[in-house]
Image (cartoon, rainbow, N blue to C red; front, side, top):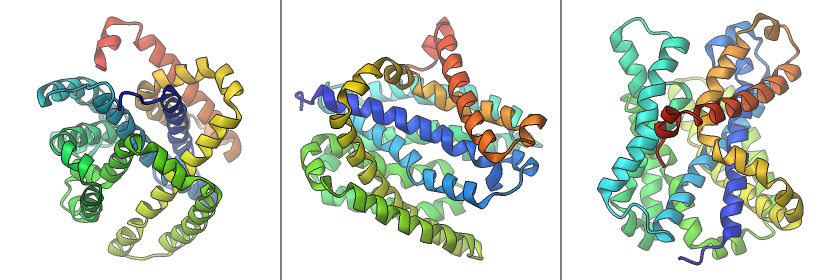
Length: 343
């Protein structure tokens, strides 16, 4: 495993850049989808809702997939995290402490709470986009103890992954949201983990299938969107949402297949853009943390609320990416910023 190619890691750097940018882009459509509090100032737009939900079938599964791939590389190629104690220490610094620091700030300024209990409930169930940090912390701790088993028993591992996905609904129902998120995204982390180990076989399997995976994804998503839009009842809607698993698996297939072709055909261009790719990749974590508060503030500006939807989406994307990147660089120039997220 120590012969993992640098090209594959470069591809993952590019994939992470794609991942963080589409996460930001997805949230740029949020005011028009009745999904944020600020949506009361914007008129619902079906096209924006369609595009936003379409991106959602790709963005977070892709982000978790990349996390699984990088973790697999660190464990299997570099022999990192040799003990559970070291893993807990590293992930506490990188995920739990940032969550404890940033989540209360986000709740205080951007979420409605009327008591200490409701404040603590937000901390438990997820503080806006920061649920991802808490989810990944729990996922790493859970996966580590069974890693050798999952690495050797692939069929059983995927069976467990599907079982966990089936438990998402009841976990949400009893408001065990951190674990519901873990169960939902476990399969994508596992896919990223085994993808590194079986990279050649997966690429061989995907060869020539990208366009068909893309078409299948687009058709199934269209059906999914309009069935969901015209469904009544919380239970039925929740069951329809389970179809996201198939959509996300298809999206991972065509995204990586397209990327592999892109990397081969545009190698010179990507080499030229490597400094920009490395800059965004290096700061992707802080970009994730900062972008949503920036968007919340941007969408709250009265002048912005009067602009055409296309102008709002494009301008909010540019503002969110650039300001998040700038804040990331500035924060990491401070001693506190450097130590806030441990590697």
